[in-house]
Length: 452
Ligand SMILES: NC(=O)c1ccc[n+]([C@@H]2O[C@H](COP(=O)([O-])OP(=O)(O)OC[C@H]3O[C@@H](n4cnc5c(N)ncnc54)[C@H](O)[C@@H]3O)[C@@H](O)[C@H]2O)c1
Ligand SMILES: [Zn+2]
Image (tube, rainbow, N blue to C red):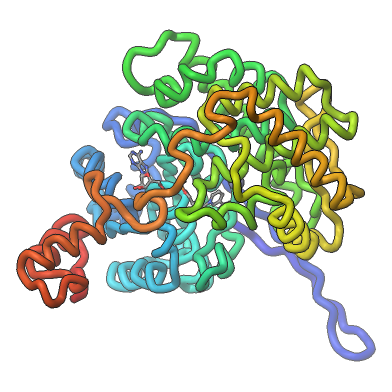
């Protein structure tokens, strides 16, 4: 929620306006946000008596019944808009389909829209809320690790425009974010690992205690979905909670004074120097977590060779990526890519490299600026030789995007393939058009009418 405070002064040639915007939003840790004994979420809707919820269709399929019972119990009428947003559909069209539901529902100016899902849903629905009546309130419930510790910590919302990722967007804070880690019990392991990479990023550069915990519990945290799956030992759950709490806190502490990203030396940009160019180069593209891990591992080597990171800390960090199944190198991460990616990042960072790299003792970072192309290439050669000592030669597990990232999966199958299969069965000539049964299936799954 934001509040604008401004003064207006006449000047010789006109008027000068000077204003400050106060932004307030909070986060609540609450496992079981949709469990009836927890009234916190319902409390935001009792005055309205109704709620429009925009949610990921996979979340609806897994938790829809529970969500409906929750609102029924509190006598709040629930209307759901179920979306299937893969990276390809992170578009204006998808955003406008959410706006259609907001218009149909007749959202009041202060009435908060509820947004439930991973970073894709919270980014796109958050953008719809930013533009609807120029500013509509919303409440976020992230359901992926990336969502919980990254996308829903920031106030950035966006859609892709053509090939440009997150090119159209806004800074729009929700009124509240509920952090419910129990959703992670159903999240596929590859998605858990993706988020784990962002936690290595923040801890190695900003919080040593968290890095120590990631190191101690790495495998258990991934296999038990942050202590929410199976019967993990109590210390695993406690460590996972401490890690996430500290990770979110550090992210907020570092980024809230810089909400609009005006300051360009950013600790949280560790691993995000060369990866933005590299991520989409392999075919299929790398998962974000693996692309940034390659960048982070290489940056650590650069830091070691330039005397900032000790040999022991360097190897400790590389071992952690390896144990987590995260990639540390790729054939396409080569000299040419480094040159191309450096040109691109210099533009974004106002002519300076500003490569955040961890230093010894870990838990802090420095920014490298004066690195020549020759230095980069020498470090790359050293890095690639070093990779031969590691399992899989430094390659990651499930490192490439699948349809759940690029397109969409419904009950584990890519939606495009399901449509095509059903289309072919009923009408072989128009295999790309959803057939009648396919349309029906989509309508049932999403609550929307699928277009032919
Ligand atoms: N706004 C920001 O500052 C910011 C920061 C980081 C990432 N992002 C954006 O986030 C997006 C990636 O988000 P993501 O990694 O959360 O992916 P996502 O939202 O696509 O979710 C990944 C997959 O997991 C499924 N899923 C979600 N929650 C689930 C659960 N609890 N159980 C089972 N399945 C579940 C989804 O249906 C999807 O198939 C990117 O578009 C990226 O640009 C934004
Ligand atoms: Zn990232």
